[in-house]
Image (cartoon, rainbow, N blue to C red; front, side):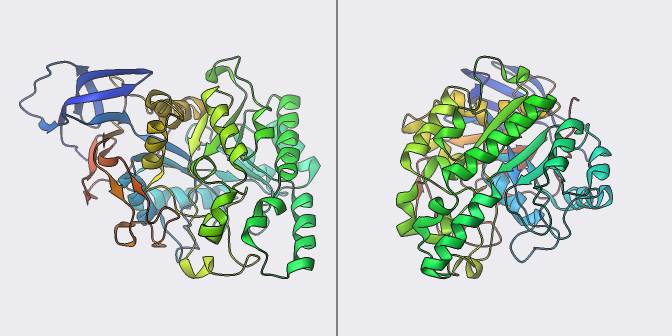
Length: 447
């Protein structure tokens, strides 16, 4: 590890582990050495954080950075920079790239790309198919975040729809299994019916009718049943319906749960009413659904039935998004603005800032058993974010950092901004400027 500057962060209001306190933080060689009041160290670079909030960095457990093979859309370098500017200090990236990350060789090659190109800390999921169980079982659970199964449509052969294969994966997976849940048969039937009626130019507001509640609940219920059958460590991604929230428990601690769930920023911010204005820019799978579904997801978070907030950052080019319904891909860029959007949700009273830190930092660390990250604790890595709650940020085309150069938030003024981001003790971002001299670290796991 390259030598890192020593920092003394003075006077910030710490939001950490359910409390708000005014304390100083001393960062030495990438780690938090001391937390307390009135700290002094003449050898450290002092940062005046008066009036700022200090939080542990967001750990985003679901992103698509498109490298290798789809780098016309995005790449690890550009998207990790956007993430760091948005207060995301660690990410876990998905395997649906080209070639798909479904062998140990390809997984190792992807980690080499991360080591070379990522400004943020990183981990990559191993991908499952109907035919690669042997490769899956060779995955090292100590330094790979998890196994990803698409139980709904994906690129190439990554749809796992063979019931026997699913049963074997759930029975034998050496680690957490993260799943995209939409029933493929239901979606294909609905899509066929709508193409017969409209052709390719299906109105965008029918996206949640095609990828409906039934498709999500049927697939999520199957995943939960398989996990209960085999005691699998299951994590269901991007919950989008009120009905799915009821699948999850809140009567035990997160560390005891064998089945957990994630909500994503777009399902917490947008609703079907936004399709008229935003069109394909808010076309995601699973679909953004009703305002009632959105409120149920918020309730699920507050009630601890849903454990984590993530982005599902998935860029496509502007030109690709301008196509008609059947040709416009699903997904969009979110890492740069997710935390700012969530801080606005705090001001709107949807969630407290203490609970927000829990859902974006503490819970991902607990859920994935990330080693020495996700909390502001002495001895832990200094993955830290300074936030200015009184400095508005207007999203414009000129200040977008994702390679695709568009955002569903364009024109939105957030009430807060990201002041500075520390990645493993390195001040990688401060008020619009980057220091790319030190790369992020590979995440490791206490398993």
